[in-house]
Length: 209
Image (cartoon, rainbow, N blue to C red; front, side):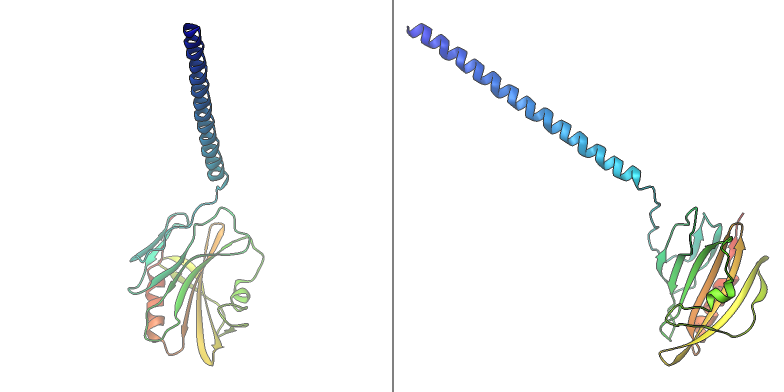
């Protein structure tokens, strides 16, 4: 009887051990499957988000945008506050890049707007509309056709009163292929240094392609 009891106990122990091992293997298999599902979902999310990420903000001596074929010298002290990737299609406008100037008079800035060339609107009228804290910008003179390093451009100048002080808005537009690029400089009337820095940057603009 004792021998039979020991044999039955051995059988019971073996069955129990096998059950434990089977359960452990099952849990390990489930864990691997769960990890695989999570990894697949992560890849799916990354794959679905095909939008290009914005480049990191950097204060560099030369601004370069290979997609636009554009580069120019950035005056010392300018701080980059916005930067974007040029998309394949533009519904209205995008701010391609933006800087804050470091001048004795605070508030000066520069930005580059980009439009699709086929958009049916008057750029001169568009830039005189509500923007940068003013409901309306008054044109100082008619648009002027100019050349910047051999490239055709249109210069437009505006003024508006903001917080009791006259601010100037200088715009230079380039038509490049299917795109229009507007360089916009904003500075207060008394800020001669900002105007000089803006002009130096504009004079250094180069287009490729």
